[in-house]
Length: 172
Ligand code: GDP
Image (cartoon, rainbow, N blue to C red; front, top):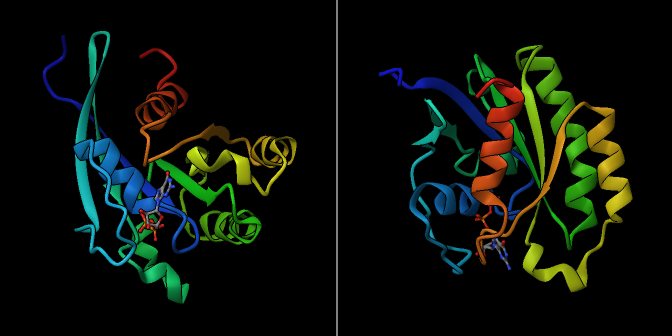
């Protein structure tokens, strides 16, 4: 087994309230907070996952609220290896907003970045506001993976990071 983990920088993008911080908290600490006002924490968290004979350290950058003002610093995108673009499956606006986030990523992010679109709040699927086909089409059009997640009920979160790693490093 190689000793040092492979370092990757992952950035979270998406409108306020879609569950970006909750996804990070679930992935890193296997925890969930239902209080929307809760300050979930720092803008950076790390976690190592084991893949067969390799270890990958995900260095995860969350917006810490600046996305409300559409003023993510350019250094947020710099040297990012992967981006998780999150929308809330019950809020069509948050899905439509991904087009703008993708444009920003294209303008400021590295050209070869790996992207996954996360349709979060899968536990509220009875109120789904975006046809699955449309979400898949958009993901395909930008060369992204597509995953449904629930930070609340812990559906698909770790698997999304594993799939992202598989996209970045096809031989892991
Ligand atoms: P952010 O602004 O994108 O970082 O979103 P937050 O992580 O702060 O989440 C916004 C709100 O959505 C909070 O009240 C969360 O508890 C809630 N939330 C986040 N993920 C989920 C989920 O998977 N299911 C449900 N039902 N609520 C969620």
